[in-house]
Length: 286
Image (cartoon, rainbow, N blue to C red; front, top):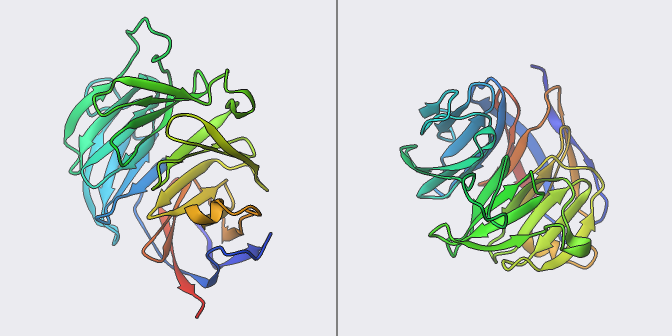
C-alpha cells in the first residue's frame, strides 16, 4: 500500500464550514481482510466490520485489538456479510445483511439479542438485506431496508413506529439508499445516489440536496458529519447543513486504496480502507 501524506482540496464555497489549516498523515492502525464499516463511540473505542472474515473487531485508538467476534454462519455472534456496525457507549448494532437481521451486542461484544422480521406477515415491518442501523437519543431504532428502499423506525421495545422514504413519499422517496445517520437533533440524513436527504424523526421530508459526487457512505461523531465515495470525503457540522447555501468542501486523500468509510473524532480524520485505518491529524486555523 502506497500513501502520500497530504490531501488535495477542492473548495466549492467558503461559507462557515470546518476549514482546516492542514491535514497531516500520522499513521495507520488495524489489519483487515475486507473492512466495510466502522464506528467510534464516545469512549474512544473503534468497531470495524469485515465482510470477508465476517467479523466485528474492537480496537482502541492506538490500534490495540481488544476483541474480535464472528465468523460465517447464522447462529448468534456469527455473520453473513456484516455490512454495517453502529456503536453507542453501551451497545453495538450490526446489520447482518444476508441473514436479514440486526444483531445487538454490549460494548464488550457480548451477544445480547437478534432482531428480524422475516417471519412477520405484516409488510409494513418486514425488512430484508439491511444496509445500516442507528439509534436516536430517545432510544428509537432505525433500519435501512434495502429490499424495499426505505428506513423503518422501531421504538426501544422493537415495536414498529413508521416508515421513512418509502415509495409513497413523493419527491422524498428513496431510490438507491446506501447509508444513513441520525443527528443530535434527531434528524435522519440519508445518502442516495448523488443526493443527501433530510427527514425528521417522524419520517417527514425536510430537505433534499444534490451533491457534487455520488457518496458510498455517511458517518458522524459529535455533530461532525462525513460523506465519502471511494476516493474523496466531505465533512461539515449539522448546523452547516442547515445553511441555505450549503455546498461542502471536498478533500481527496492521495492514497492508492479505496475509502470505505470515514469519521472525524478528536481532531483526527479516520479513513477506513479494506485493509486498514488511515489516520490524519487536523490542524485548525488560528
